Amino acid sequence: MSLDPYKTLGVDKKAKPEDIKKAYRKLARKYHPDLNPGDKAAENKFKELSEAYDILSDSAKKSEYDNLGEDAFYQRGFGGSGYQRPNFESGEFAWADLFNDILGGGRGSKKSSFSFNRGFSFGGGKKGENREHTLSLDFRTALVGSEVTLDLDVQEPCSRCGGQGVLSSGGGVKACSVCLGRGQVTGRQTLKTFIPAGVKDGQSIRLKGKGWPGENGGEAGDLLLKVSVVPDEFFTRQGDDLRLEAPISLYDCLLGGTVEIPTLTGRANLKIKPGTQNGQTMRLKGHGVPASGSQKKAGDLYVTVKVTLPEKLSVEAQALVKQLAQVAPASRV
Image 1: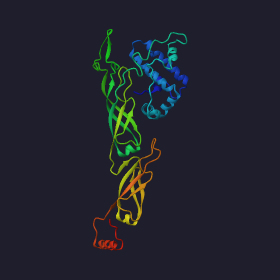
Image 2: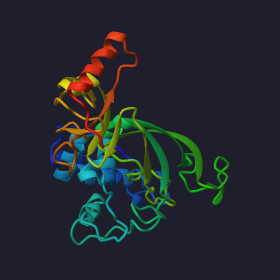
Image 3: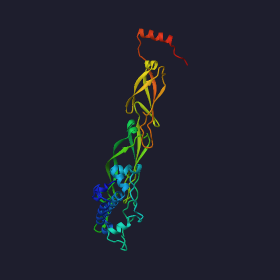
């Protein structure tokens, strides 16, 4: 789950690095596990404070968070991979001196006895399983991208026991009466995410940390969104290009002219040359799949002519057609 580092440390966005460090040291000392032995809530709070400090003490991470906001930072920051939580389980982390300073140690003083791989950790527990969800998108939304809202059934850590499945009672432990010892309960999650432009039918989008929760403080798995694109009434896709069958009148094909055809962004003019044949294909440059990401330019729209004929001819019209057939006979295969 994501967090707001500013809210967690109680500082605002204009806070200086020294103010951020001061706020972290004050709160971290209060919730440090060495000063709160056996207090799971304090360990979890200390974990959140450390994650918040990891973000705000690093200028690159802080800038990414400020630009994207909470959800986008965790899901698709840093080029789409999302924020990677620090791994403290090895015990060899860059803040070791800071942690000891929090306890009032300093150089030569007794080191903290607490180890991040001793129960709660950013990666020490068992990681949760990935989960899949089919996301149905209409053709045009898949091409131009859009923010979507997902309503998902999820397994969440039990709030009563903190996901442990047991509760302390009279010096012993007993199974949690809410989750019945499982550590998880079924809930409902509403999740908003941005679907990038140009996604294809069958493509999977990975939302890091949005899968099933981990066990014993382990990180959550990922959510894999499998895209199912609903066919469009007019367009079909071929790579970065679009194809369209356009009904063109017999007279425009014979005499030439300019006709309007639909595009993703409205309508565009297509020039018809005299003598255009049924089934002939013409290109409208730049009217295909919009440019996005690694795709540096938009695709093209290929329009295939479907000649439309008049359904009924008057006697006078029939005579004119016969006359036309004599003076301009059609070629035969």
